Amino acid sequence: MQRNIIVSLACLMALCLVSFAMKADGDTDATSKKTEKTTQQETSSPVDARALKRLDAKVAFEKRMMTALRKKVSVDFLKASVEEVAEVIAEHSGLPVDIEVSAYEEEGIIVKKMDINLVIANVQMITVLDLLERSDDINWTVRNGRIVLTPARDEKLLTRHYLLDDFVDKAKAERDATETVKQTRKWIAQLKKSGTFDEVDARPGLSLPSMEKDFAQLLRQETEHNASYPSDELMNLFFRFTSPVEEGWAEEGGLEGAEIKELPGVPAGSLFVSHTRRSHWEIAELLADLRDVQEPGAKFTGRPLLKHDFISNKPSEHVLKKLEQKIGPLDISADTLIEEVAEHLTKKMGVPVVIDTAALLEDGMVVEDVVTSGDLPTSNTAAEALDFLALDCKLTWLVTRDVIVVTTESVAESFLQTRVFDITSFLDRPGQDFDTDSLLEMIRVCSAWPGSGWAEDGGLEGAECEIFCANGVNALVIRQNSKAMRQVEEVLARLHRCGYKIPTANWEFQSWQPYYGSFGGGMSGGMEGSGNGMGGMGGGGGAMF
Image 1 (cartoon, rainbow, N blue to C red):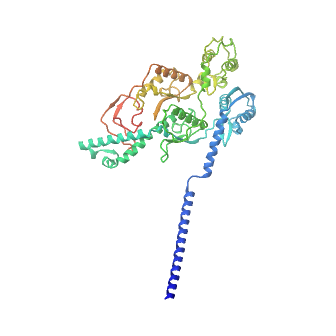
Image 2 (cartoon, one colour; image 1 turned 45 degrees about the horizontal axis):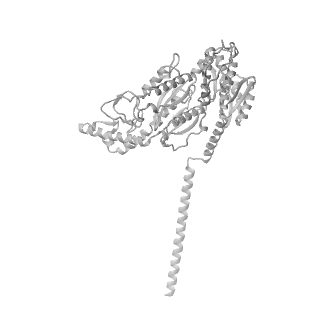
């Protein structure tokens, strides 16, 4: 019996050992499978660590380049060679500079015979490059971390992602969608009462009975549609206000590949833009200006725009203040060369005043022959002195960044800049619907002049005005030349002084019936009236009740 017990114990121990071994093998297999699955997931990820490093390197270079281009410099180019210009730019910027000799040869330009003349002090490096671009065959671009001097502008496209969620009032989009669904329920009840419910389609292939079964889906899609309104409106602003006229967008016959996309699957309130570096600067500056006039409280979950995201093309506040300051009598007599007058004004104002020699040559004027016809009258401000000089020499002037350029009328008229004006004070109750067309029409009429004007009226190509309102932003966006911009400023100042308020839109309501573009993809009420809906139902999802 004892022997039987011993045998039984031995068998039991052997069985336990086998079970333990089998469990261990199972655990090993499970661990192996788990590790294999994890490894497979990691290898199948679309994110490449090397690509991320390249992106980080590009951002770091962009920061260095922007810092270098904003650096204040002084240059003294008198019959300087392109090589000398490249050396000075590299010395001041700290970035390598190349000359695209082959591109100059293709244009029939011999680099060795080019003479560069530019004397200017205490301006940004980007201003020096812009002035060289105006007066000589020196354009510049950036390739592979280097500044390249070339005879023509580089049209290489860059793709960037812009987060715009701070322009989206998600709570309002939800409220408006809820109201739309509420009114849809009422409308369906009316159709049932009239006995026409089964005869009406929301859209081809989608009957109202099937839609009635899923109001939750309707609410969700209407909310998403309302939340996308700011992105749609910003896309419109990008198209109209941020690309140089000579470049343009692909769909308007401009640069091939220059496009804006709102891709599905990315966070609401974001756009992907492909365009040149200069256009991206304009886009980033426009967004920064809109956020400057935004009421406090709008939350932005993305990275805010920083200084290294763009270089401003607007006149600097320093120059604008100098233009309004009194400069006293001008020691300028008749037959004074315009270049000497520019030097005198530079000393008086403390702001560089340069002559656009290339523009004068295009109009058949030789700089050395342009002189004052008589004594310039004593003026109160620097701006008045420049006006007298321009009138006397049949020229005009404009401000770009930190320099004043004396140029021809044709060049000044086509030199467009974008400004954003806060019009919240013109709204009686922000968020209502207002007849914004009346203000835009007033701006266009009061700031136009013969031979110029706005693109919509057959005037200057690219001259636009629009009102943008979204989540605390009430902005008038203007793209015009400096002469028209001053007139716009005066119109707005007069309106502000007299307590102007934009009139409420005069909607004429008819029987309401929604239109379903794609089952909640867009509803509009059956109404007619004047004015643009500013505020309203999230800007586009809804009918007005």
